[in-house]
Amino acid sequence: MKTDSLKRLLRLCLFVLAQALVFNRILIFGCATPLLYVYFVITFPRSYPQWGLLLWSFVMGLLIDMFANTPGIACASLTLIALLQPYMLKLFLPRDADEHIAASAKTLGWSQFASLASILTLIYCTVFYTIEAFTFFNWLQWLQSVGGSTVLTMLLILTFETVKK
Amino acid sequence: MENLLTFLSRHFHWLLFLILEAVSVVMIFHYNNYQASVWISSANRVAGQIYSWQSEVERYFSQGRQNELLTQRNIMLEYKLDQLRELLLSQSEADSLATIQMLQRDSAMTEFRLIPAKVVSNSAMSADNLITLNKGSNDGVRPDMGVVCGNGIVGVVYLTSSHYSVVIPALNKRSRISCSIRGKDYFGYLTWTGGDPTKAYVEDMPRHAKFKKGDWVETSGYSSIFPHGVSVGQIEKIFNSKDGLSYRLQVHLSTDFANLRDVCIINDSGMLERMRLKEAATDSLMLVPIKE
Image 1 (cartoon, rainbow over the protein chains, first blue to last red):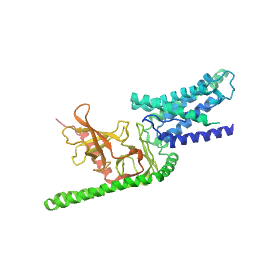
Image 2: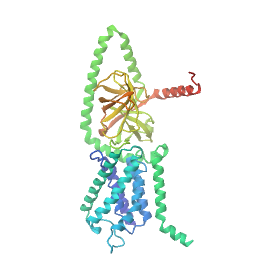
Image 3: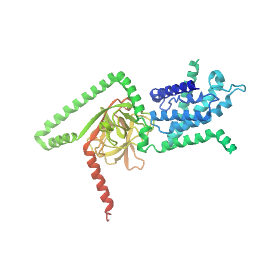
Image 4: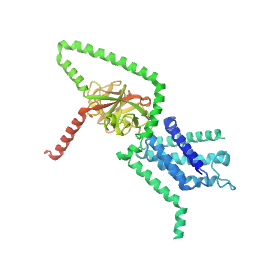
C-alpha cells in the first residue's frame, strides 16, 4: 500500500512537471494544448477508495493551477473527473473483471480503453475551457480549444499506452 | 444512528467532492484577493524556483538570438542619436529654446531607476497571459510598476512576493496602457482582444488626429507607470470605433512576447507623489459641487 502511494506520488510529480515545463507551452493552430495529466486520473484501479481518488485529483489540480496561474480551474474540473471516473470505468469493464483492475489498453482492449479515455478527456476539456471562458466568451475559440485539446490529449494518451509495456 | 453512519460512509465521497469543488470555486472567484493569490500563483517559491531553472537552461540556448536582437537595437538607436544630433546642430543657432527643452527632458529621465530582471515563466497564448519575473519586493519591486524590454513595453507589475513578481503584460484583456502617436501627441489606450500575440489595438484615438499606416505608437507618459516615449508598435490598420466617434488602430507590437528573456522594471520615484496629488485633486472636486 505504501509503495503504491509512493509510486503514485512520483508519477504525480512527473505529470505536473511535464505539464508545466513542456505541454503548457505547446499550442497547435492557436487553440490545442495537450492536457495529459487527465491520464493520471483515468488509470486509477477500480478498488481504489473514492475519497482517495478525489484527494489525489484535487492536489494534482492545485499543482497544475499553481504553475499555470489558473487558480481553481484545473482543481474544479479534475475533481469532477475524479468523481465520474469510477462510474465510467464500471460501464466499460468486462463482466468477469478482476476487483483490482485498472484502466489500460491491455486490460480493457484498445477500443474500450480508447472510448473510456476519450469520454473522460472530452468532459475534462469541456469543463476546463468553459470555466476558463467565464469572462471572455468566444464561441468559435471555445469550440476549437475543446476539440483541439481533446484530440491532442487523446493522441498522447494512446501513444503512452503503446509505449507502456 | 447506525443507519446514518452507514449512509455517511457509503456516500462520504459525495460530501468530499462537494467540499473540494467549493474550495476550487472560492479560488476561482477570489484570485484578486492579494494574500491568497501569491500562494496559488507562480509567484510562490517552489513554482518560481522550478521555472527559473528552466529559463536558465533555455537562456543558454537562446543567447545567440538575443545578442542579435540587441545589436540590431543598438544600431537603430545609434542611427537615431545621429539624427537628433544633426537636428540639434541645425537648430542651435536659430532657436536655442528647443535645445533647452530637450536637455530638460533628458534630466527628467533620471527620475527613473531601472531594475533588470529575467523572465522565468511566460505565456502568449491564453486570454489572460501572465509573466513571472525573478525580482520581488526584496529587490524594490512594487505593484503598479511598469516593465519594459529592449524592444518596447511589456506590462505592469501585478503581484510581488519577496523574490518573484507577476506581471500583467500588454497581451492581457485587462491591460489598459495609455499611449500616443510618436511626434503627434494624440493619445488613446492600448488593449488586446486575444488571438494573435503580435497584434493589439489602440482605442479612443480622436477623429481629428492625423496619422498614417506605419507611424509608431509609444507610451504617452500620462499613466504615471511608463515614462514618455517607450515604443509600443507600428500602426498596421485603421478602423472606425463602434460608436463612430473615434478611431481604433491595429498595432503590430514591437515586443516579441513569445520570446521574452531580459526585461527592466521601471522604478519611478516621482510616481507616488504624482498619484497622491491626483487623488487629492479628485477628492477635493467631489467635495465641492460644481455649479453650472
